[in-house]
Length: 242
Image 1: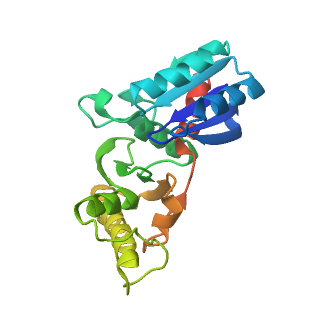
Image 2: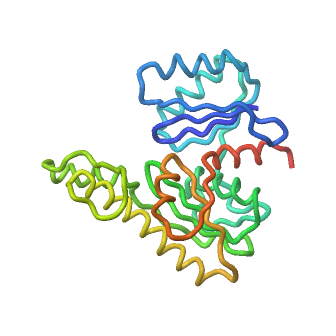
């Protein structure tokens, strides 16, 4: 079974056997040779079935699906279910809830029971709380530190590219911009943590995922577990017949 997490900038894939991740990889789909590289992955592994979760534009999703069809692979597109064992989504319209956030919750809850505060840091920072009963209490979406810095620089073009290295107060504009944006994301997580503790009967487990999870974790005062492949782990859970 081939599992595919098609995000806004990268395609992440893994092979799964009996719900466990095996081989895995990632491709940046903005590169000109993306189609050729994706065809090479399919030629190497020759999958017969695939689960596809996408938050990418329809054109990119269509390109990925067309390559799977040419390779003779049967594709199932994964969508959000408002309720499944151990998880009930808060959104009145589940179609508006990102499938990546939903799969991340499934992957995290497969590792340990709730309460859970899940933070994903990629193109955006998303925060989702699941209480001890498995009820999703809602979440937040904010720009990632990289996107924050980009937004500032579009309006203040004299600013240099951000420098995200180091911690504390900065003595130059590049570091000030980078560290300030990272501090803003960390402050978001800290506030979510305080509110999650007030809403939960027990202290929630804090789990970070996404490409910038490790960078965010070093700015947090509370302990957190980093799980880089939660969306794929959620797909692995769904790949096992119930």
